[in-house]
Length: 287
View 1: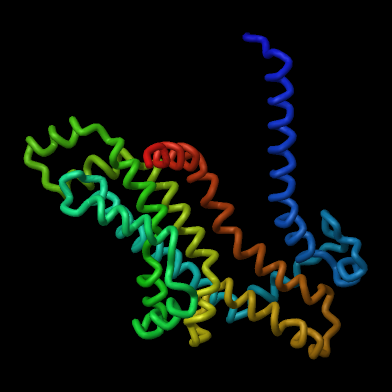
View 2 (view 1 turned 90 degrees about the vertical axis):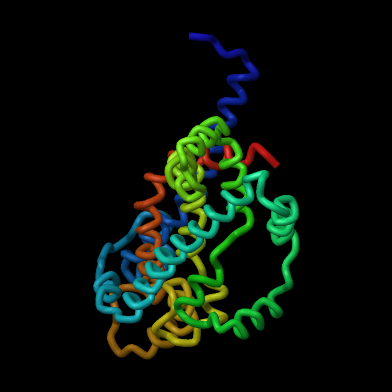
């Protein structure tokens, strides 16, 4: 085994320390939220819950189970994430494939306009008025109106440009058309990049709050993040008006919903994480 010199050992130790610090900073809010959600009211309000739960009870999760608004918003979030991610991936894959081809007419101009949107935008109010005038203030409007992020198209375009041209030429000689080459060559050879971009879109859709809050007026269409915000704004008053002395604090309900909201992300992320670094690195090599 090759021995490390002094500077390499110091660098390695510092790397482990920094990674450990960042891991603690990322994990602590999750652990604290779960501990606060299952801790007793007196223990939480007296400040005894710092990391681990005190006077454990799970009654707040029973309340969530019976909360109709939570399940409606949860199903809405699953809807926006599933259909929104599928739509975004369709637009991004087809757009990136076209932009990766030098034979595309006005290719440089199209690439410029895609990148231009990463630097400049019209501003919040013009965008809001534009969305309202386009009639996207509904369930399917949220899915289709926010279909593309320029960064993800550039990432996939760079990845597609790295596919060997010899394979495409061989497929073309065998009679494959553009759709067949995309489906049978480019997509199977770009799984790492596609998994990474899918993760980007899925987390963005799952955590989507601002435009859903601004555009959606029907409470039956609001996603979980908007529902959580509404609870934060109103639940303390509702909690104070309750005649029953509950065993959990008012904040425990908010923390419990927060924990429930991140469970799908915690389940899915480990399966995609192995593609994450490879997809970003290989897709970001070219400018």
